[in-house]
Length: 361
Image: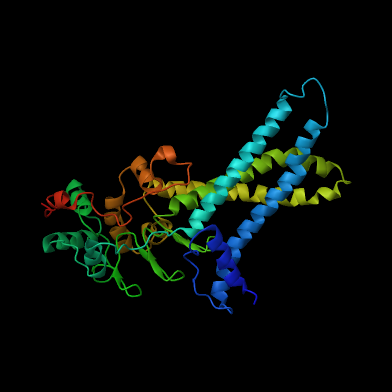
């Protein structure tokens, strides 16, 4: 019997990884719904587009260069001319960027974005039962600060906020945030994704091009996917420019039409990817997610802005520390590896930090 498109897609993903993407259901039926069908279309489009660009760049650009170098025998056969060095560097660099892009894309699409942990009894007590061990005086102090717009926030407030297990509160009553779908209390910066059907730690957004949420655990892979896509597009734009100019000046070069198409798409994507890259680097530097930037920091409701202002004290530790929180050690920034351990943003030492909890003077 033949596999349905969705089942075939899951088999492909399971071949390259061990689990299907978070945005896909592992038990899809042979007749999938429209939403499930669309979930696999966009990631496959990204891979197909990448393969097309790679084929055109290799067949019409790099391989002809290599052929032109080795078709002339002479004294410099075993030496490198300037042209050959350039071709060699472009060949190696392009394939290195391509490998890093594909691996980052795979990790962003197939690894968990971070889920509410329930591995220990302490996790269960916090996130299932809601036992946060916050004294009533501290709770009342935080509610008062969040409800008072314009109240000055000093170091004493920052100490209180950073010592708390959870700071963010519901809008209406100021109670702890509880997910009715997952039946769990939400850690700070956690949001429920209605597409994945699960809560995601430090959720940034649901990315249809990955069929997965972008959250605490796979944000670096998402960022590197954009970065290496930008590197690939930039390299193609620079290296193919002379070929495209030759085609435009020679009307008999119709057989090189695929080069013009791919070059135009790369030229269009390069500034878009750069803008997206700069935006997410700005968010990481300022300890914000896309959701927090759009729906909280720039909310029209002043009370939403105020609650974000207070909660943000817990996460914002300066540009460099914010980047380390998002990407891990900065010397490993270009490497698609992330081993974050505090996606629920607990205080580093809750026992010691609890001594700092004190009412405002």
